[in-house]
Image (cartoon, rainbow, N blue to C red; front, side, top):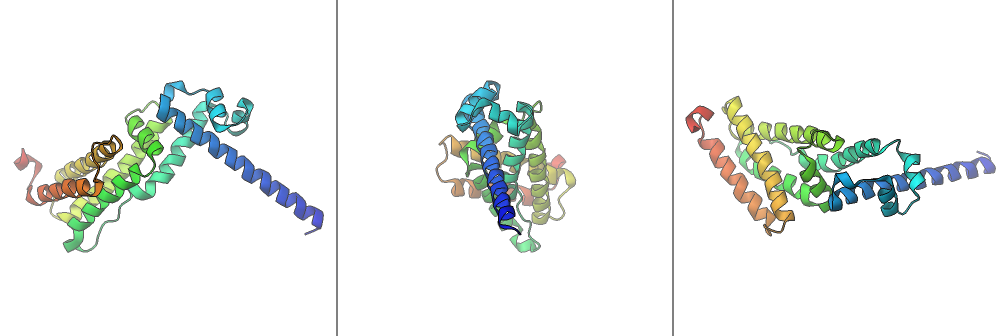
Length: 213
């Protein structure tokens, strides 16, 4: 490569890196605004000011606020997905232990970043927004992973029982995360252990949803 060509290449790379950094600052500003004031307060001016850029810069990166929200939803989902994808165990004698670890891992991943956790938890039922719709997909994946682990704890569990306990586990994860963020639970590991062991006991002693009722 000619010296001049190398200079142009490095300049282009530097511009691309700076552009990506600005885009990330804008996404973070949107997330922070939603956390502090709610989604209804979003304006391009407020977001740009918080990101430390001029308002027209917003439209260099996004066509509209709706597109920006779509990208925020995708970004946060990518950040949270690994922690909300617990592994099942092929060893049946470890299945209960794996369930407990799965609940701990998922809850810990939710509270790792307060801004992301609060936005996720406060918007998860709002199907009118990109945030709520993306969260629903993420929650559905978590629910299915938990159902698989329940079946490994109790291989003869009925589909209805497996679905019921998976739903309880997802609710426990969200509930414990919220309680920890609110300061109502200090020892999160103890709380997740207590809750997950109670679910394991229920899984092992429930013969069917009908019998439980």
